[in-house]
Image (tube, rainbow, N blue to C red; front, top):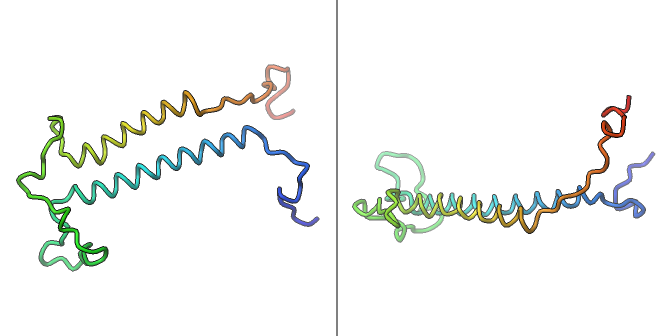
Length: 134
């Protein structure tokens, strides 16, 4: 028998549970990727005092790969400034804590307004059957 794809069978319908779960997975993955990109980029740029390698290190400086990053170099005396007087460095607040707060708020919004609760049918054990059809 030749291999057929879902597109070859227009008489088949996509299960709504599968459709909703794929949509929700894509949304969650998108939010996760956005927060991951923000956190890694922000913490790299603002977490270091200097982006140039120390003397004697044989690695290539990141400035040679992506261009000058001098505008992101910080004065060591002000490197640990604390926004809102929380006692943590600014790069930790804006690079880690703020995305976490945003993810919690997006998760609450998502669960209240976007998430679809699908009917999964009748439980076979309640109907007098066994889960494996024996």
